[in-house]
Length: 345
Image 1 (cartoon, helix red, strand yellow):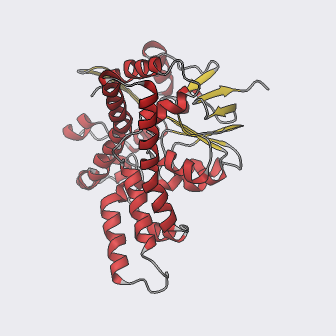
Image 2 (cartoon, rainbow, N blue to C red; image 1 turned 90 degrees about the horizontal axis):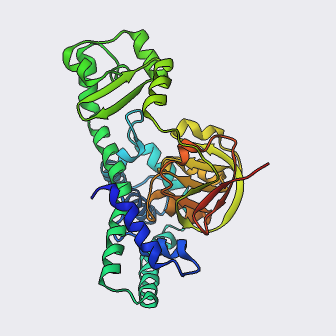
């Protein structure tokens, strides 16, 4: 299902809800997916393991086996892109030790779907939903789920290709960090670039796909800027940015854009955390933040789950928040309506 379907479906659902007072909240209810994404499944499984632990002193083999299986199934989530490694047993144990009331949280997660299902049924009755509306709702649910699924699966593939890349690096006498900054055609032809060029690419490189058979690659910042001016439309944050409300509330704060774990060091208390999407590794920064904004994600994505647990305003699926918002921007996050506004100082 292509993403070109997303906008007409969203438009049609909003048309059905145009006369309603709480349009954004009701849109979130109608598009709440039935399927759980990988982060939701991982969070639930971790809570299940924690619920089986009475003490962290001398953990029994059965618990250690559960942790090993958890890493085998979900360890790749901690290795987004090609830079990070899988979660380790120490990582999982550290997270388990921070979890309190696992049984209560498991029950809350179980109740969440039931509550939303009941809300949806009540809303459908109020809307006198016909077969056409129900069909659009089902499409919307699938799209919300698939938006997160596609990036999750891409990272799953990238994680599993790492051993192959490491072996290729070994054949050329390179490190893994050096081989990942080579193009495919360079690897296949054996045209290995110098360490100086690798360092350039690590600092700055861009690949422009103009059509299926034509790509442009550069590690020269001047050339990259020229290509951007020629081929890319500049994304400008004029007054509002729109997404889906995952947890309601309204706050004002300073933006901190966090793309990966090292960026978390710049997050301060009551900042507005802006991310492509989140993983459990981001929780430390999320605890400090006043609200969350993500490019990706559906109502059951990791950011949405954590927002509900922490009771912090959260807007997901903005598509380009990390591109148009900058560190230090003062914004109002209105998660009652799913709108981010820049505040004039």
